[in-house]
Amino acid sequence: MKKILFLLLFLTQTFWAQSVFEQGNEQYRKGNYQEAVTAYERIVKDKKESCDLYYNLANSYYKLNQIAPAIYYYEKALMISPNDKDIQNNLKFAKNRTIDDIKEVQKVGFEKIVRDFTGLFHVNSWGYIAVFLAFLFLIFFMGYYFSQTTLLKRIFFIGMFFIPFLMLVAIGAAIMEQNVHQSERPAIVFEEVVSVKNEPRNNATESFMLHEGTKVMVIETLDNWKKIQLADETEGWILASAIKELK
Image (tube, rainbow, N blue to C red):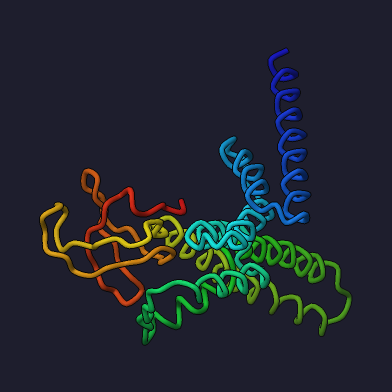
């Protein structure tokens, strides 16, 4: 009985979310962007998420010239679908409207090579690749077992040794991407202008200023302060209320 009630509740919430989502889409098509935001935010507050929901919500905020929430939801959408070109392009347009121009420090050497390689695909994509390779290994094993000619047996035999190596590479890349994903705490500045301090207290010396829409990495939390790092590796303390974490 409990399972049936749970299923009914799930279906009801799903249909409700889809209905509200369509209402938001209709308001967006009519140019009623604030009404679209209201509809989409209702779904977000109900703890539902999808790439399309975040993308449409970001577009609505962008139309309203609210850059910080637009960037925030583009980033949320990109976390679900990291290779989506439309999201990437719209995020670039939104970032072009931010004030802070922070140059990213490029990694060099072996670390850069490894990160560039593992970053080619999302952690889920690496998982799919590993599963595909496992399936391919099974095919090669069957091919080797049932082959009638020496040439085919050699080909399948070599493949049976080469494919496990590729599987280990894919699994290793997935683990590395997962570790990076879990360790990173990206956030977006929501205050129009905010002071970043050299210590976590109000009367501390100001290190620099940040403006809305800037992306930062949270590396430490202390009371109502968060220690952040910028793409150029500059660090400082900012009030927790001035930023909104993506995870």
